[in-house]
Structures are given as structure tokens and as C-alpha cells.
Length: 315
Image (cartoon, rainbow, N blue to C red; front, top):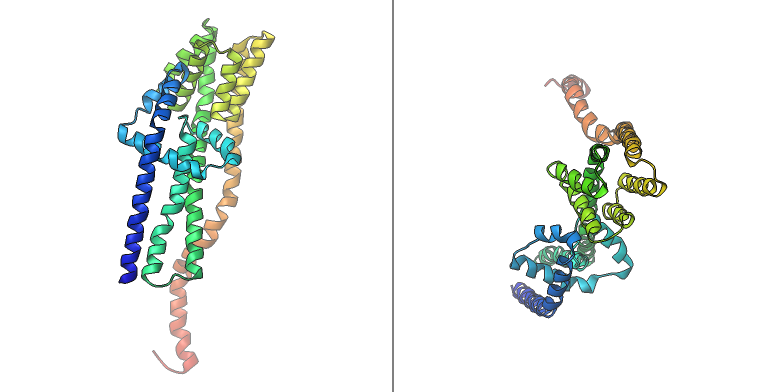
């Protein structure tokens, strides 16, 4: 019992230290965070996201605490890659990187605590449990990045699926006589209820053009923000068509056909991979169940017949 009380006192002490540290760091960084948020909200190109991210004060304080905690686990070598992934996943807050690393560090500390408590209470805190705790801590540190990758892939897949229909809308608007910026506004309004992700990206691109950014830069930013290869190739096509003076509507029509062919080829590729992927569940899960159902009754009857013959008895 003495060990349990000691452990509880240690847990209370650690919780008090962490809460004090978080409160102090949040208080010190409050003015800096307000200043950075005001600077970002002043930019019309991304004003739409700050309207959507209007968190209540409690959540803002929690995010600020995560941000301050993440400064300790932030790695400069991974900053560029993770920051790109956060942008691709639609996390564009200036403190998103430090919040993400704060969440990673906190997960690495929190997940092993129940395991350590379990082994301490049972008096089994040996080398093997310590290794298990280290592995769980590594899993907790790696889990946020895995989830972030899934969010990025899901968002990119939604944008990629909506791209051919968006290109058709571009063609209709441009053949009707609209220029590029009104076309962006019109198309974004049309797809608002169909693909919210694409709507947000087109709104940002239109906002950048309204602030005076050149078309080439705004379109390249569109491709960089999403990270979708098909959209990046579309952006390159639009930039080259504008520089060469060719008809953008005709180029988009050809690219729409090409994108649909690509989507069909990707679907066929996924269908060709299915037989290989289904081998493992078929061998280890489906076939054993089928063997039990088909051969089981016959094996029971054979056992009832052969066992008495082998032992010279009658059941």
C-alpha cells in the first residue's frame, strides 16, 4: 500500500507541475498569439478559415497550451515536411506545427502511464515491462503523424474525385465569356455543397487574386496547398496556356478527358490489386472456417468409427 500512495503522490506532483507550466506558458504567449492571429485574420485570402476556426476561449487556451508544450519536441529536420502535411490537411493556423508536436509529445507521455501504473501495482516493473512501456510511448509519439497522413490522403482523394466535374464547370464558364477570376468565384459557389474542400481552395485562390497576387503565383499556390498531382498538372496547363496565348477552354477540355482516363486507369489498377490483397484473409480466415464446416462433421463421424476399432472398444 505504501508504494501505491507514493505513486499517487508522484502523479499529483507531476500533474501540478504540468498545469503550472502550461498556465505560465499560455500567459506568456498570449500577446504573441493574439498578434499573430490578428495578422493572419487581416489577410483576405485566408479570412474564410478564421471564420470557420472561431473556437471558444477554452479551446483556444488548450491549443495555446499544446503549442507551448510542442516547442520542446519540435524537430527542425521534420518541420518542413510536417508543415506541408498540415497545410494539405487544411490546418493553416500559424501555431499548427507547435500544436501538432505538443500533441505528439503529450501522447508519448500519457499512453505509457497506465501501463507503468499497472506493472508497479503488481510489482512486476522489470526489464520486459519497461521495454513494453517504451514501445507504447513510441506508438503514442508516432500515432498523430499516422492520423495526419490519413487526413491528408482523405482530403486529397476528395479533391481528386471532384476535379473532372470542376474542369467541366470551368469550361462552361469560360466558353460563356467569363474571365478566370469570375470563373473561380462561380465554380466555387457551384461546388460548395458538393466538395467543401475544393470550394475552400478556390475561394483562397480567388482571394489571392483580389489582393494583387499574379495569376501564376495564385495558381501555383493552389497546387502546393493541396498536394494533388492531377490538380498540379491542371495548374501547370493553365499557366502554360495563358503564357502561350492558346484557348484555355480547349486545353481544359482535353485535360478533362485525360483526367477521366487517368481515373479509370487508377480504378482498374486497384481492381487488379484486389486478388493479391485478398489472399491473406482468404488463407488465414475464410478457408479454415470453410474446412471446419465442410470437413468437421465427417471427421467427427470418422472418429466415432475408427477410435473404437483402434482401442478394441465400442462407444
